[in-house]
Image (cartoon, rainbow, N blue to C red; front, side, top):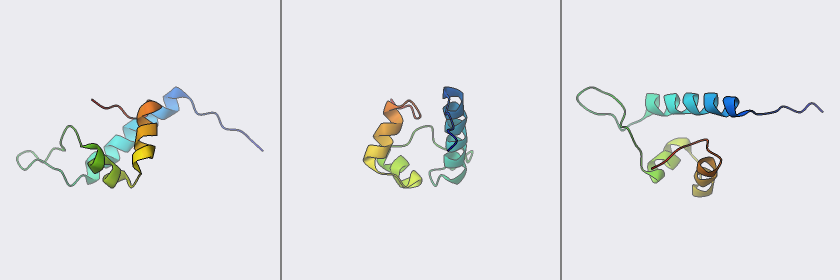
Length: 68
């Protein structure tokens, strides 16, 4: 069985691609410039990603997602 190692760089690339996809399909667009909103509430992010509260928290704790 071959093991694959996930590096910090792999996670950063994944994070960038994930946010690009979220922005691309986000229903929360500004009317004026049609740009995605800067921040989502946690329940909005969970709904868009189809994940649970604990999964979102694990992404935060592991540094895959940042929050304020």
